[in-house]
Amino acid sequence: MKKIVLLTILLFISSCSPRPSIEPPPLPKNDFLIIAHRGASAYTTGHTLTAYEMAVQMGADYIEIDLQMTKDGKLVALHDSIVTLHDVQQAVADVTFNEIQLHSPGSAFEKDHLAYTLPNFDDLRIVDLEEILHHFGDSVNYYIEMKSPEVYPGIEEELVRQLQNYNLLYRDDLTPKVFIQSFDETSLKEIFAMEPSIPLIKLYKFKKNAHLSKKELRDLTQYASGVGVNEDAVTGKFVDSMHHVGMLVHPYTVNDEEKIRNLMELGVNGIFTDRPDVAFRIKKEKSNMD
Ligand code: G3P
Ligand code: CA
Image 1 (tube, rainbow, N blue to C red):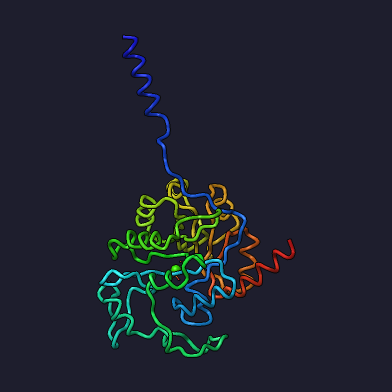
Image 2: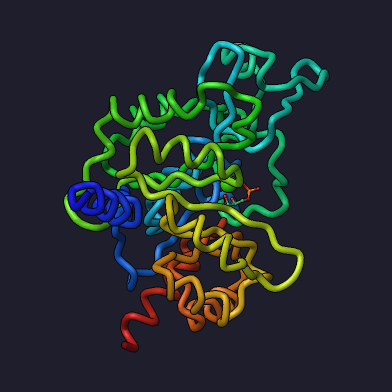
């Protein structure tokens, strides 16, 4: 009888003890990261090697890449899931990478917004992730968004495979070579299950002030290292509440100087910006004052 009681107690204790779980990786909290949104996209067509090169030269900490997947399984750096080929709109998922490359992305850029004069817009090309990783290797940091992963089965596996292939998942210090971001929680959780060492950023678009319920926060902290939030929804209270549970806050997309300064004052951990040169100057001014 004693044995049965003891066994019952042991079973009860073991069912109450927390299951061993894997936690999102630790990250530096005090740095302010300049995430070049689609590269230095205020100055040239985003998602081109030129835009990424400019971003690096302007002092960006990360180059931001939106990913779609073509019919032949290539991860292509594009914001939209639709491309116009021969005047016909087509889903990226329905065309091959070679077909997409016939499209010249330079023509879409509004040249009257140009602050830097580039040699030739016609030279700009749509590129795939493989070419970007081959071009920059581990000389830069990557902040990669899976766009609409629900329409691209296998995008998570292919992304992780390429990052492993280029040996980008190691870390010398707390600064990661790669962040992965998405609005799609399921997809982020898939990445976490495959490769928990990659810091994940859950994206949100709030209509009013940013806020997450206790339940949402509990769930988020199981797999994510931070949140990406539309800048107009970010408040000091929200930033504090995220920091309280160890989450980074990266507002998007912040191009105005005063807004950059205000968000810095609120303590955000970085911003997505089309103007990495402006963010770099402000960050430097601030570090000189501190
Ligand atoms: O990824 C954060 C931010 O880039 C989301 O906006 O430009 O991808 O629509 P976007
Ligand atoms: Ca993006």
